[in-house]
Image 1: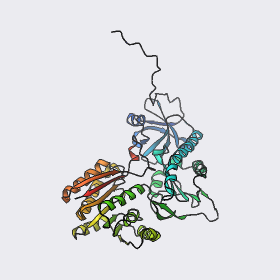
Image 2 (image 1 turned 120 degrees about the vertical axis):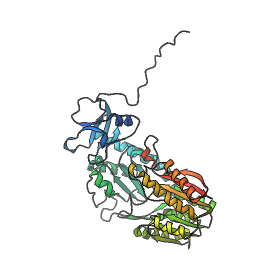
Image 3 (image 1 turned 45 degrees about the vertical axis):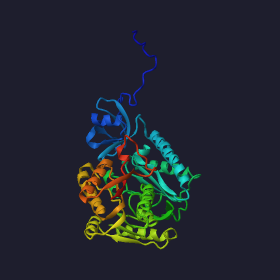
Length: 435
């Protein structure tokens, strides 16, 4: 048989073709391990993987090369952070090109969410407009709460007036679709300290009424009203990532335990509790923060037109202590939601976090009536979905309950998951029937 003739088709160029880094006056050289991760699509480089770095005059936009001198691209540099480099391009770009790239990517992120806002405009006027690495803008969070837009700049390389101006210009360019009354920057105190970020201004980045800028509002989510204040709450102020799971919990509670007794553990400002109250006879909600429960009570009052005279009992205290006490007292519920804060903020904390998840789920299973609903969540990106399922399965064995997994869920669609960026899949939600 004759040998096949050589193809005249040009060879396929790999996504990360080797390119000399040239004689750059500054930049970062990273280890082979980190280089391989970047070539596989990951965006982070840890400080321990940097072999050398030169950032004159506090430069935070650096070219990045592997230890053979081959260019990998350009990254935002955070000298005080454990995550020292966050890739923003696989090309060598300067600051002006980066600002243009930021504008383009933010426009794309917002445009991709416009159908969601349009489809849900009667029941929801809030969503995440930009989700950091998932939208190729590491460290940038943009949330829309009604007529307020809240920014979080979580990395040193974004902490510049030029970046803030570019973001505001892009957001104001969508006036055909939404017109913000004000745009505020709301820092995460822990991240600000870790990254060495500047103290943000107490004034908004933009206000339609500069003399009296709007800082408090009532926004809509799934036809419920929620109060929002720029100066209170966690993260950007509320949790938009659970809004689809709120609806799922309500639907399954109606299917498995209509007009039953429901419990919402770590309720924060009452998201799950309010939804459960539509289909349950009585709801109890627990949180360690009295301020959060006061806001939850105000949210309940704002939704009397939807909930009628349904009551929610707010309980302030430690969830572990309360569930342990109630399980010992043989309290019973038809539906239980567990939505604790992140137990594992590092890989070293995973083992302890899994013990915590198992404990909460064990106590919940001891209190759920046969055939009842368990919705259990984890927002720790270091805890995988299989880790959470294993903890729940172990709790089921100890509680001597048969637990059927009805659905695996994650964050709402405005918090997209990128398959080769595992950090974007941080929220896990399991919907189970407990027999």
